[in-house]
Amino acid sequence: MKPSDYSQGDAFQAEKQTIFSSGWLPLCADGQLARPGDFVVLTVGGWSVFAVRGKDGVVRVLRNACRHQNMQVIATPSGHCETFRCRFHGWTYDLDGRFVGAPQPVAPRDPQSPDLHLTPLATAVVSGLVFFSMAAPAELPDLGAPPPAYGGTVTMEIACNWKVCVEHLLADQTPSPDFTWTWPLLAICRAGPVTIIEQVVPHTFLRTKLLTHVFGREADDRQTAGTIKYACEHLQIERAAGTPAAASPLVADFHRRLAQG
Ligand code: FES
Image (tube, rainbow, N blue to C red; front, side):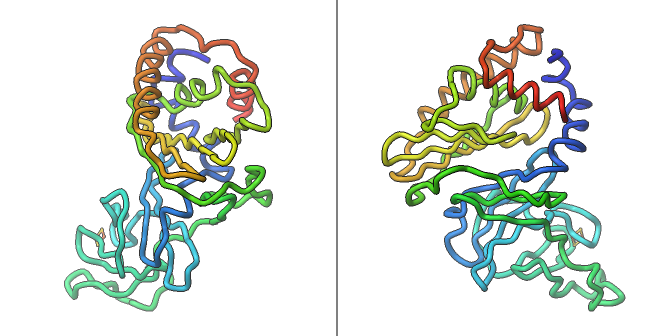
């Protein structure tokens, strides 16, 4: 890995067109969408998307891009609503992403056109997590045994490249029944009745979110997440200066997969 791989927007754009355009990517915990109308918005690998539970109970992932002028429809990271009203000119969509209406001055010529609906993406719910894909590969992600009951999610913003965060999560680990890594963005730790899934969210090339999903007990992991944030922001400076990641089998495997694109 070169220092620019951790610190340049060009590298992130290349990853958006390869890694983040081909496989399944985690978006949130299914438990974050407990009721119809609950939604979670994220930018993952450069794609602005949201997951919402419909009135039929089904979770869908949609592009967060208005069909009027391609602006982001939803600005809040999560919430609950009956419909989505674009904040720019008021085009409105139902929970399935179907166009509902627009104020007269900006109304489309043909309100029945299917081109007016928000773009749906391939969606899968696996082991308590919601995944989406731009390409819908046939094989679903395999997270092993299903986790116990959902307990909550802690979100941390980290000023680092996403690869630094993955390397940090993998550095001191060896594959075992208690620790698994699911390419490219998930680390799963099992400890007796508790399962913790660390979800790395590549927001921009120097901004990463870490979602810590806790199963089997309530989530109170802000201190741990804060420790990871501190370590990753320190490591980001080292990687950008050319200090390589610590040698470990899982980090080596991560780099091998990165090289494959
Ligand atoms: S961009 Fe959404 S209504 Fe105009």
